[in-house]
Length: 263
Image (cartoon, rainbow, N blue to C red):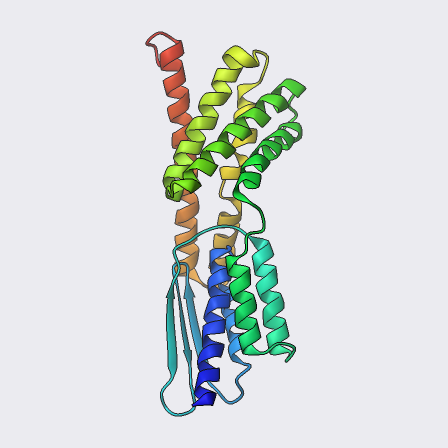
């Protein structure tokens, strides 16, 4: 009975590690490899794992003819390479005998519950991201200042959206709409000499699904076609949401400022 409990705890540990990595944006091959490494801590047991972009399936032969099967539905999405690194550290310690399964499970729970940065600090960072992308894109000091303010507006919208539990699509559309409108307003009244293109492109960078697209390509090249296609579709939908938000803000602004003419 005790051995069965240990096997079940090890399987739960493997699933939790895979869930954290999947939520944090790791590629499927890395997640399945980590799960297999953890389950290999049970000598003489046959283990199988299957990971999709929305779920994890793990089966571990308990030795008495009744395999332990766990299924975990995963709905959250983010990009957090720090958490992937921490999970890999726990996996290495567990496989190396430096950590017991119970300790590893508790550490993984702490990693899952912990937050590297506070939400208000993340919102503030949108200003710095937009400001420095303005420099990279060759903007003038006025452009960089306008980009920083626009990024601050975007950060505020994303922060409010996270507080009221908006889904990712609505958050991207609303954020893109807000930054596009604020950039045009500042170009007209607050920063008359600013380059609207540079300001919008600089502020929009945090919304672009670059890491998701890269992971989708890596999944596809690794042979995980279902997850690669799902993540590719997610990247396309995100890009369309951002484009729709910015386009709607430009159309609305020119409609209001132009006295009826769309452009």
